[in-house]
Length: 176
Image (cartoon, rainbow, N blue to C red):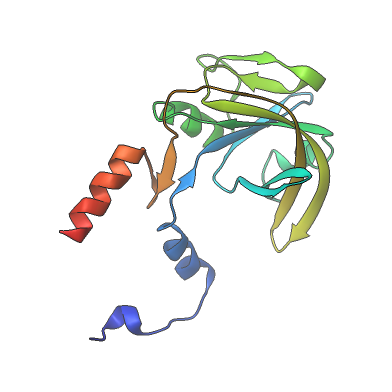
């Protein structure tokens, strides 16, 4: 059986963005020290290598956070829990003080802002920045980490925040 979904289309930016919304991603907030400190919501966080331990995230070169991240020696990567949609929205909003209340944070090692009550956080030393198109891929080596043994991650799927139960329920509806 064939249909419109079987017909290939050009991989232009909007079509690609629509396709990538089908991929569920863990929501993270990346922070970096500076005057002022910066932070942004990212769904591009991934493990690159275990030996040596290297993680990565991507950042738009036009982002207000990029100038600080482009010079930062260390960054914090925070994995958000299912109930932290407001934290994700705050750090995805331009033109505001993302560290103002009700955001709860403290200065961490190397001056990196550490968000409170996240599912996990990693303090990472930046090892390389690779410019690709309109983004930079930041490669970083975790030096310290803290994680909770309970809780489920906040996910981003189809343009909205979701949890594992939400994703399973949506998949069940599609299968029916």
